[in-house]
Length: 127
Image 1 (cartoon, one colour):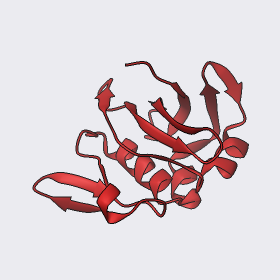
Image 2 (cartoon, one colour):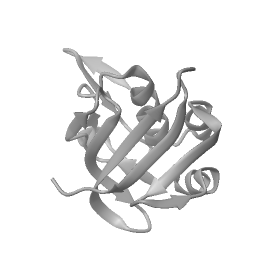
Image 3 (cartoon, helix red, strand yellow):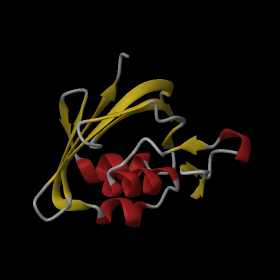
Image 4 (spheres, helix red, strand yellow):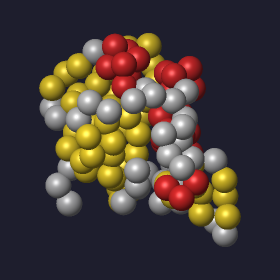
């Protein structure tokens, strides 16, 4: 991750320097850490930001959070962050999955009083 002129960029293992992703729209530091962990395929960092009982909903369908991201991390990443809403807890952007290809998505983080994520809603976005 690099910061230049107030703009943060991340080079994920699957991206080249000419294809960096700007994260300056993400103001919530914990969300930014989660996106960074996802981009860098860092499972340990990703899971450390969530509660043990974290829930995952994919297009409204309840999924097993741990199993889903154990398989996804390293094979999925954001290409761009296009929009951030809900005080920085909702991130929208162009996404790549080795399994599903390229599409627009949202990640909506829910944070508990201890500062950990206890729920994540993900899905295809239309904007």
